[in-house]
Image (cartoon, rainbow, N blue to C red):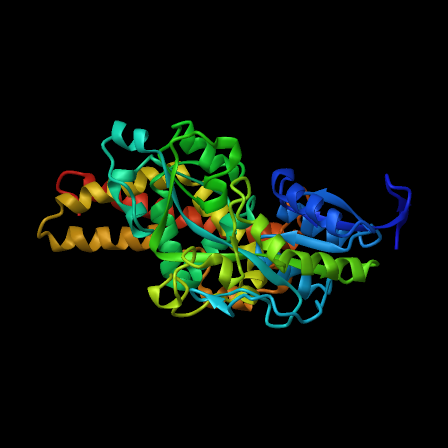
Length: 423
């Protein structure tokens, strides 16, 4: 346990927290906690979710007590690697699930302390300028009218985006989910380099609609913008989480910080406009979270965080090669396909060819059964900046080759149908 003299001259214990949250989020908690616990001083290391996870796993000798972030699959990855310890059982006031998403780890290694809703952010002035209707649902994003007007960030760069991608895959199924993501990909204007870039891009009218999470859409940095955030009719609510690391030295202080997060004071801090999260305590979130029977996207099947963690890397790899790097090609092919479908009329041969094109554009480079058979080294996280193994490089080439083959074949079929007299 690290001890040092604080400004009052007394010995204080240091509690080290690794978090993906920015200072605008964690500073109110730090100040309030230290007032209530003058014998503890917080040291906070701020990194994005992926970097924080790698930091914890690759630097086991660095003092750290708590991991504090949003993406549940990051906590699952750390739990699977033995980097987390079970948290002392406590009554948090949270329900077991919110619209199908489990709030706490059933094994007790991490707890959900806040909720956020995934949905769409849009700029009313932009929509008016291009005569676009307000999008209401995930399916709306497939409509041709939105082609070139949607922004998203890559799940390999954003834990929040990874969760929405994984939620769509788990809700619609692997094949149908990727078909939906491919068609959305055909409507993309851009893929931003970071999560915040989606709401920022909408505010700056670089594109009109974004896929994001409520607290990013309403971030203080873009306050005063015209952005409007809407939940879909089948909303997704996910918890932000906290865990105690297995190498933690200051266990008493760590447990006290967890207690503080679930106290009335800690939960009320979440409601501050600059933070904008929903408390998990029922008495504080009444009216802010839909009831279970409203039909969220995950209500029917729930969310399997373990499955998400197991295939974390392969989902990111496919999204980057299939949606991000092929964005311009997808946009061209989906646009052409929709035009030709509208002209096909009763020509059965043309309609059959175009149906095949649609299947090719929406087929992932790996079937669900193939994902399950992969070794963990290929399914797990592929960190940026780390040299890939020969096995990973070969597998990535295979994935890329299948994507290119499918899209090239789809393009050839579209050319054949477009040719006068062509079939």
